[in-house]
Length: 280
Image 1 (cartoon, helix red, strand yellow):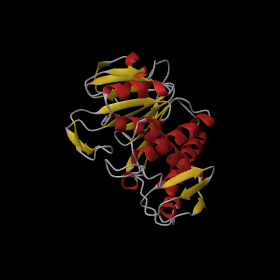
Image 2 (image 1 turned 90 degrees about the horizontal axis):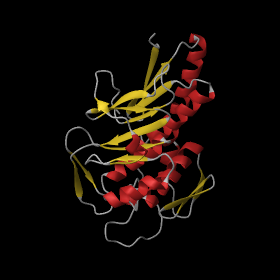
Image 3 (image 1 turned 90 degrees about the vertical axis):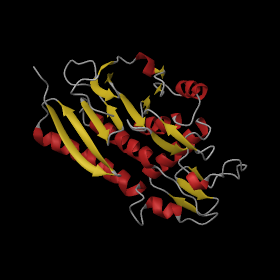
Image 4 (image 1 turned 135 degrees about the vertical axis):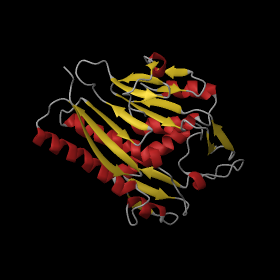
């Protein structure tokens, strides 16, 4: 018997978010659960969207040197992760953009720091591009909400490049999703991709040079926000760096442009792409 799949959509943070629920939950209960997940998405967007004048991110970007400000939890968590992944990847992932020194210029110290629940501004005029990291953080919080309400059989996606797979439908081994010409089986893990099917270019934050992206790069993690950061870092890191990054966190997997799969990605069950895969 085929397990019914219910789909729910909402647009936020520059992407269409989708929740797929597998099973026959009570309709009233399910509505409450879905609204709880959408509330999490709305809270994240309200704090970190650059399109919301007067929100927490906007106030942070207008801070003066030496100013300290209490920031809400979603913005705090996104900034902390952005700084941690910048450090872990040696700057291959860098959300700070113009806040960081130009290539070849010595580091002048951080423009900002998070201390507990406070943001401290050392240099005014700093910028940050949370982008896919914020969308991944929203997926993480939405997935937490579904689990807290006992709705474990679900798949949550943000646009075409980011998803979190919870428990799969029925007795399946996992959610079958598309990764290029392959289908992969995912369960309780997030998958992010950077770069499209067509060759693209992106600016290397370390050298400032444009880098060609001949094929999508993919990262897996228990956190969609972390996976989004790692997928972007892969575009600018070496194979040796990718090997190191795959070992820095439990449950990480990296899929390089040449097909090399590291960490948990090495254990993926690849099958030729079928008609029903969800493209991450």
